[in-house]
Amino acid sequence: PAQSLRGITEGIMNSNTETFIQGDDGFKTCAKYCFKCMIEREQAHNADYICFYHAYNYAALVYEIQGTIARVLYGLPSSSPPLTRLLRGPFLKNPTMNSLKTEFPRMAKQDHNPKFRALAICTSLNIFGIGTEAPPMTCFGPGYGGGDPPNYRNILQDLFNNLLGPNTTININTLLDDLIRIGAKYNLATQPYMGPHALGGSRQLTIGHMLQIFVRRTKVDLLAYPCRPMGVPFKQTLSNYVRSGKLVGGQARLFAHPKEFLGTDIISYHYAAVPEMCSPEIHSGQLTRGALLRDIETSMYSHGVFEDLTYLRERIHNCEQFASQRPPVKPLQKKKKSRRS
Image (cartoon, rainbow, N blue to C red; front, top):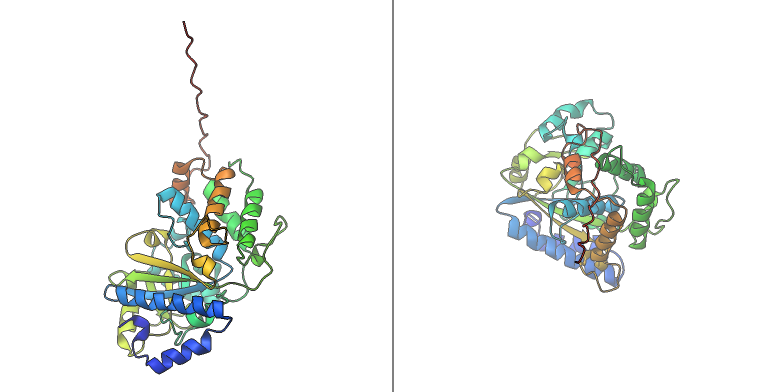
């Protein structure tokens, strides 16, 4: 059976669905359809993968920007999911989940420590949210932020500073203003992106987003561990934890190395609490996810972000050790017109 359905009776499933999916008819229809897809995908991947659920809200704009950059640089399909981490620099000192776990006991605020958050994400192991801080059904509507949100504008600022290098001629503040306006237009929660240079933002309630992430069973113990609240690890491995009980529940921390998320051992699917954000449609005139990604990509092209793709790939792979001097971009040579005799 699907991971989330192991040990779950039909009565519990129906009761949880009716209890936690609250809202108008449009939201309920969207939510029930998304959860149906999640269960079907769990069943389809169950033999070879373990499933994780990552709920979020404020991080949506950062994730979509990073996913858009990855699509342009690596030629990924337009249907690719958002990307939780893009730069590999933070992973240079902690290249594995085991190295992060070794350092964890010395981290102030545990998994709320900025260093931990740069490397791993919080996940639940059951769609019904048994034994987890962020039950997927409960968090589907509003999303999950994990306490007071950080200044996301600073996060975007750091992303583009590292990506573009110290000698960029791009006005990053103007670029951020444009991207934040786009996020607000599509009703992403942009309140934590509001800074001295921000010109607009959504004041609406947060809209929930969710990633359903499948990690290959042969790799899962290298990339994830089961835990208590605040990321405190259990002693057993994730694969043993999932096998050991009649019910599969609780939470886990998942190593978010972009090499793994862009590789073949992880499959991700994106869902959202409004139908438009589930749609790849671009030309309908509605505020769909497809149109959002088009506008984000167009904005970055217009600001010159994708001027030198080779340079950007190198910055992503080794942004902490890359040479500080950005090579100049050679101007295009105009062809001389031949004189007619």
